[in-house]
Length: 348
Ligand code: NCD
Ligand code: ZN
Image 1: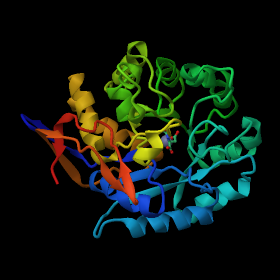
Image 2: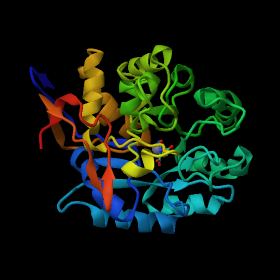
Image 3: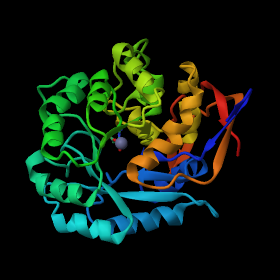
């Protein structure tokens, strides 16, 4: 519902989130808990969350770190490895906390060393997931050193994803944090059980923001920001189209300031501090604020077969300046849009 300067929507969910562990977790979990009803918690810890027992332990750590009286629910994810057994998939589903499993091609991104070296190695696991209706969440980039970093998503579609979809026609798949027109087109032409998440930074930024006028490490993430035209444009169109195949997933991925402002800076952007405000800005830029609720609060839940949240949130049209940094364990993290003015603010 939109009146002049307020916007009320069903409380959103974040279908792709990194919250880390230990003190770092305590620093950032409140940001998401304030905004979101639930979040899909990415399992790329060291060591990865690769069985039901580890998922339960991580779930408990997150719940313990929540602010008092928070009703936020973490949705746990299993990290697929070359050795994931069908029994582990079954045990994860039986445990009740794990709702999906994640494919990281080995070496594709932060803490993906234990990831899958050959898709054939997880075919038994995928067969089991298809049978159980458990979604496969995919980091869709090839790791072949011969492939240019800007092409890795498109080549993944061509070399891997097209075949997986053929071999497992009933498997539910979320193509995570899509960044290219190629990915948008693939999802649009695929069957109903193929969906995608889109991050706020891929909607609001492109590679010029990262590279023109000096290299900006706080814009560096994986998959890397692409060209405005056609890629950022295609993402904006898809997100604001009202098509239920596209939904909110921030990929908020905090790293300490020093780990990013470095000669070998980490990939990952913190957006949890104002996720819904960022999406509101992106949707407003397309004159599509009426499409925000579906994208943020309905389509993801429907895809995962979960109920919609009962509460609502309210956003107010109000300029505010994003802080330069936030505390992060014993150091700081620089958030997305640090020092910039945003035009929407969540009403507490
Ligand atoms: C993520 C992280 O830091 O965990 N980084 C990122 O750039 N998105 C890993 C990931 O999702 O690829
Ligand atoms: Zn991620």
